[in-house]
Structure formats: structure tokens, C-alpha cells
Length: 246
Image (tube, rainbow, N blue to C red):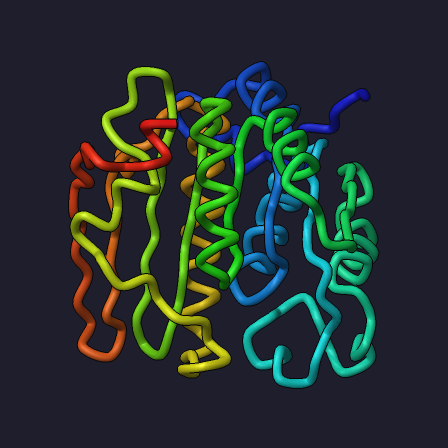
């Protein structure tokens, strides 16, 4: 594909980013699990960055309760598959990118194969079991994992390079955070916070695509938007971590 760098003129104006580096980053294979409040801004900004190999995984349809925080959808999309609507709208806006969609429930082998073929994994799901499954395969195959969650006025974001010599993984996280956040259906969510965290996740992923590093690797950031408190914690390796052990 012949690239038109005019689309990324402002990116190329940043120190340290050459056309060759940008080209290599755009060719990374990216997978996004979940096209909800977090996945929508992640998909939007990765598309805007010019990613040529995007994969969207979500079996859900658009519901009216989604519209306040899932910014890719509108009232005309109700009842339609989220991945199909997202692909259609993003290709209209960014016709040079490529998007594959998976709109049916995947079995473990299918999830494993998709992550194996990916370079960067974005976990934007709101189900703890799904997060553990995705994290396990990302660790197994040494793939970057960008994960986030939002509930009420609170949010978390963590990044794991999952390299062979990585100090920790997602499974080690619960040494410092023993209670996984419940989903927004059960506890509500402040809509702008989903956009903030999703945008932040996209930024961390793009840095990993460009530089194969980010200062947040192996750390978790915890946001309390109601009190405007942000803190960053280093995640220590958990000896009993089932993901690391396996």
C-alpha cells in the first residue's frame, strides 16, 4: 500500500518520529476486545493513527443505554452489531485503513489464535473472566496488553509488555487490588470518564507501536475523578500468579 503521509503530518512533526517508524507502527496487527465505552475511543484514535491491521471483537448489539458513553453509535444504530457499525463508520472517515470484525462469541482456541497473530492487545471488556482469559493468552504469547476499566467515577488503566523478562503480568495485579471492578451495568458510570480512559489507552498503545516501550509498563494508574485524584502504582510480581506460572 502506498502511504500518504499528509494524513499524519502532525505526527511526523513530533521529535523522533520518522516516516519509516510511522510506517512500521501502522503495520502492527492490533486487536480490540470490546467496542463499548472504552473500545469506541480506542478504535477511533487507532483508526485516525492510520492502523492498517485492526481487528474488532464484540458480539453485542447497540442498545439505547450505550449511547451516552459509546461515542461511535447513534440512535439509528440500535439493534445492530457494534463491530459492523464501527467498521462502517470508521472506514467512511478513514478509507485507507483495514478492519476485520468478529461478531460471534469466540471459543478459547479462536481467542488464542487471534492474540497469537496480534502485536498489541487492547482489553476493553467489562467481564472479569474475559479479562483473565485475554491476559493469559497475551502473556503466553508475549504480546503487549493495554487494559482498562471504569465504574462510577473511578477508573483503572494498566499496561503490560509481557516480554519474556517482564517483571509482572495482569494476574499479578491483584496483590495490590484484590477486588475486580464490577461492570457499569451493575454500578453505573460517569460517561466522560470512559472517553478519557479509552483515549489514554489508545495513547499508550500507540507509544508501544512506535517505540516498543511506555513508562506505564508494569504499572497501574488509578483515577478518582470525583475527587480529582490520580495515582500510579508499580505492580509487583506475585509468586502465586497462575498466569505467570502457566
